[in-house]
Length: 277
Image 1 (cartoon, helix red, strand yellow):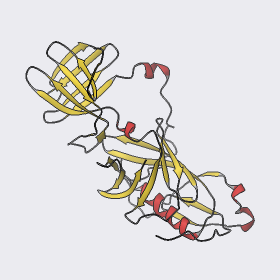
Image 2 (image 1 turned 30 degrees about the vertical axis):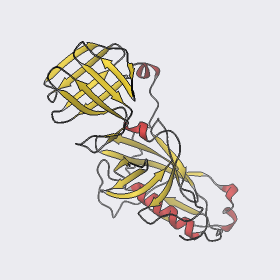
Image 3 (image 1 turned 90 degrees about the vertical axis):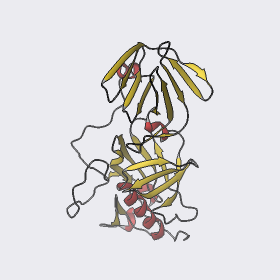
Image 4 (image 1 turned 45 degrees about the vertical axis):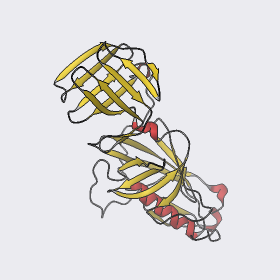
């Protein structure tokens, strides 16, 4: 591991994947002059990306906003999915819906109250249809997406196994501290972090500067966009590590929670960033 070098009096603009000096002025390099500025990226020589393949910067896209009170009030108690055959279960405030055989069969029930069971809760949808939800990590076999709950639905004809809850619940909460970037480790005593918020924002320390961006989780995976950062100069070793981190972050397309609880962010099936709480 390399120790940080002494700070250099440079003011440098940052971009995902790009760190360099542009019009640097030593008189403006003091930490007190830190400001937040939009981070841009020159894509003139890069192929067009698709959903889940790196930073997608679209200035015309709508800003992420928190749901209004009506939307929050209508949030289901539970959503769950399973495969082979495809099925889904939604339990709302008043009604529950179970779709089986890839949506060909539909059954509705009055939404039941959850009953505590060992490691989770049980929903008695009817006398012979019961859903059990446990707080154990679950991976959808079709998409590879991680979910915070495992779900079993028992019917007279079959037992359905699947995943439930919101994948983002695995990311939000306490801060993630990065311990590896692109399988090259990080500098001793340096700090790189990820803080995921429920409203679709992520922020943290990139080594030298603080950053924030938006993130989205879809059926295709996890991606980051619309990033901003402070613009402060640090020791070259830290600036290089920051470049490695932001470059790695720009290529993320999915995530996993490992058996040991580590957050692993992947780029094209290669571990790019590993963090722990």
